[in-house]
Image (cartoon, rainbow, N blue to C red; front, side):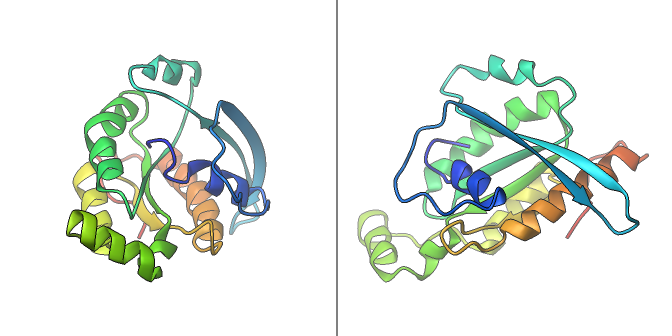
Amino acid sequence: GDQAVGKTSIYMRMQNYEMPTEYTPTVFDNFSDTYKYIDRNTINLHYWDTAIHEGKFRIFRIFPGVELFLLSFSCGSDSSMESLISKWFPECIKYCPNIILVCTKTDLRNEKTFCKRLTEKFQRKPIGFEQGELLARKMGCITYLETSSFNNEGIKDLTEIIAKSIVIASNSTLKQKKCMLQ
């Protein structure tokens, strides 16, 4: 997703770090995690947090064997959702069909000052759950999830869904795109 939608904050929360208090531009970072799932099997997860600017999509080629992309947009930014549809999704789908759509910064929906500013400046409300879920279905994503790194909401669910999605996708004999998790 676009810059400043909250990707690095999610990434840091997944590693049990505190919420960053100021925006830090990402260059490239990665970490690994082992996830144990229901039947006591383990899966090794490797995460990459990258900064890809307009026209620099060739970086995707350095991740051979990627099994899943997380595409994210901020619930407070229509432009981040539009960019996801027109720019990020078409590029990611070339390299991996397994995508989880993640709405970030959901805590902003309850922030009165933020909502008032959106209404006054853009005559709109934050992007809702229904809009995000509909977009995920249209794009053929594995699933849709909402997060707030600020409140640490949805982060644990995201980690679990990532692991389950990779297991399901790698074991799936279905080649057609459809929602695998809800």
